[in-house]
Image (cartoon, rainbow, N blue to C red):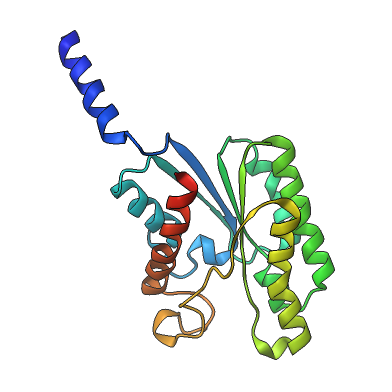
Length: 204
């Protein structure tokens, strides 16, 4: 009996050799993360976990997305998320602020407050900022400043940056739901495919 257990342990160790130990990733975001219109099982966080797990990475991805969430809402909700431990924290908020034309200084302040709370509770956590963009009808100045907001926060906090979470998906009717904002199931698959190399590097 003990010999069987020993060989199982050896096989398990060999399978995971060279791969990262088990990690927990929190995706803290809005409707994009939550999988609005498609459900969490078809949303990119679940698809990304499936892809990572299939390739031998021991990872648990927690979908902490909430449709309609603003950066201010995230500040009030983050304390609840901090009740569980995690290794990587992905912040995907701000798009709803931009769509409402809220002051960028306020959005930046709120996102910074969320980051500060995460750092205070779990100093060793890797923080990832998921960049967003807003439609050009918000005005050229606002659009450009909004896009640059995430790079500035990432630099200021020594965080990793995903330049645009909807890369290759935004603006493509075939990859979005009728509202033109939320990805459909195919769009979420592309997001997961795009994120896979990024998180593979982070985990290694």
